[in-house]
Length: 112
Length: 112
Image (tube, rainbow over all chains, first blue to last red; front, side, top):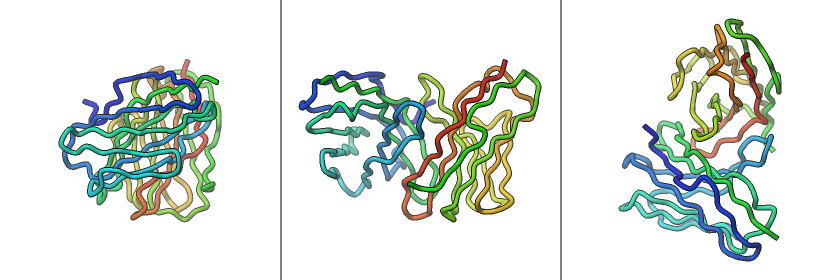
């Protein structure tokens, strides 16, 4: 049973608007969350992370929000750019175990 | 970019044949991982290593074995390949305490 779920396989957004990608998890022991971005024919690259002691982390155009009570995190991209078109994976871990569980990914298409 | 290479990058093989995929890193990271990526499943952990000769199973380890005889190399072996092991395989590394993983470029394996 998947412990990390991304229920939207795809998302289409106009350039300049906000992209919101969602992720849900079931394991309350997860205390560290990450987002990765993946272009076709390449490996995923780390984007942004958040610890469970925070509810928000921001890095430039990218912000991750964590709602522990709902076991939900989201990635906001503002403003969206065509180069952001990629598959986005969320991942979760219990920090001390250094082992990660990934969602199934959301394919973002940013239209010019 | 983290120094991770995977070989081969593409391979076509027949059912029942043994296959070995190699991951090589130049970062001296302690942790190494093998994932497979399949549509609808995202990235699933096969095996990981937390040091030389120290390995453990992931979510989908059946039919796979691994070995790590030196820090820089992590080998994934399919003893007798099956069509269900057709997938894209990614190696990743991480340095304990940082938590984010760095991924290799992937190996596309087709089992006929």
